Amino acid sequence: MKPIFVLLAIVLSFAEALSISQLSLTEKFPSYEYVLREFDIDKHYIENVEFVDFVLTNEEKYRRFYENSARRGKKYIPLFKDLLVSDGLSHLFVYMSMTESGFQTYAKSSAHAAGLWQFMSATARRFNLKVDGKVDERFDPVASTEAASKYIRALYSMFGKWYLVMMAYNCGEGRLKKAIARAGTDDFETLMDSRLKYIPAETRRYLQKIVLLSMMGERIRTAPTKREKKIREKILPSTETLVNVYGGSSMSEIASLLDINPGELRRLNPQMIKDEIPEDISITQIFIPTRTLKRFRALYRPPTTQEIFAKRGYSKLIAHVVKRGESLREIAMKYRATELDLIIVNELKSKKLTPGKVLMIPVSKKIYESRLKY
Image (cartoon, rainbow, N blue to C red; front, side, top):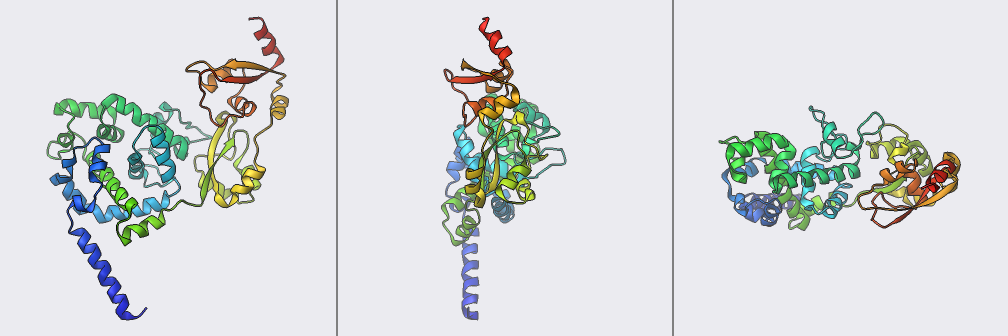
């Protein structure tokens, strides 16, 4: 390219950046009303002096943070949005995960929170994530997002407003309740007022950051400028794909099946602390390189019913009608079987059950005969 054209390109790029920087926040972020409405925040917050100052001071820094996070998390963003929306939540909560971890798979805080949603161990277990010496599902993108959705829902039931949910997620339920009691209101701008200090400064910045990243994300999604279009190109769907795998196998076996290095598979799935995929997980999802998907579909298979019968000493099948509220784990324990056995025998695609569904339960001769007595 000739020097004159290089200079012209630089001047035009600078002019575009300058014109954007001089816009008001309502002009910079056309979707601001939608974002604020989704979080139950009054639309006039876009004119709040402290928020305007926060944006003007940090916009460029957080734009870089957004780009870096989106690049790291490009395989998670569509997945997270789908999981959140399917659970009745706004897809904008994906920016809460971005704020928490920057989509760094191995993210850990000094307070020992971990994973893409930065769960503490106790909270993770409260929402049925496995955290032990074998598996840490805080690093599992699917399991941790499902748990985060449940936690967000639980907080909403407690506080009734989405911005309060985000505050509680950051500073804790008890601390937020005390803040609301001190303030005598749960009004957003009152709680966020830095002079009154009802909630910690870290929590105020946390909310401001989520709102700013959400507005950036919505702007970039619609790609009105060349700069945003370039960012979008960086976060196109990635080269990893989620697949179902069954407990009782190992990451090394799957890597061998796919003809890839086990280290590559482990880097994609940091939630698997050890090589073995425990049987009590029964069915889970892992990322594999998309280039290996055809090979996976052709070669990977769960244990057969015959293999399960031989391994467990089963000899009979019993029909069980699922009752309302029953879980797969409860049914398996009732018949001294495992979740994995029930999934394989009934060719289930997930653990979710609907009342009235008939499951075939593999049992030993002893269990079968004991059931005949009733």
